[in-house]
Length: 116
DNA sequence: CGATTGACGTACG
DNA sequence: TCGTACGCCAATC
Image (cartoon, rainbow, N blue to C red; front, side, top):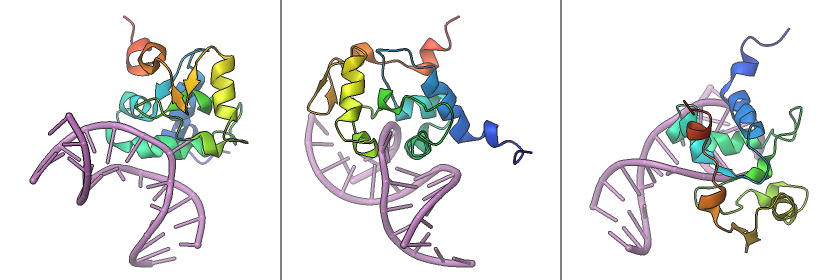
């Protein structure tokens, strides 16, 4: 009843990975894209997040930021401050729309999901 | 149906 | 090292 491999689409894979992000962690669009084998399709990850609130369950898009830990997608939430609030509530400090110690909170699917 | 944009990232100068 | 250009695929105008 579905349009073939809709759930296997690049978008669905992004949703799956984002949902796997542990609480208090953050990742980048490029990290997800590269994990999916589309390192140069980082834009598609962000575009997929556009439907993140449309999929079930909603994916924690607030845990996804750009490579520098900047909350570039904050404006796409209900309120621009929502993303920051959610991150801080999970233990991730945010300063000026930028994740503090981003490298420490960074969660790379290509690594975390590839633990041998 | 064609051109432009888009929550990014990498390559090149 | 910093700045600019391009690529990726899909959706929107």
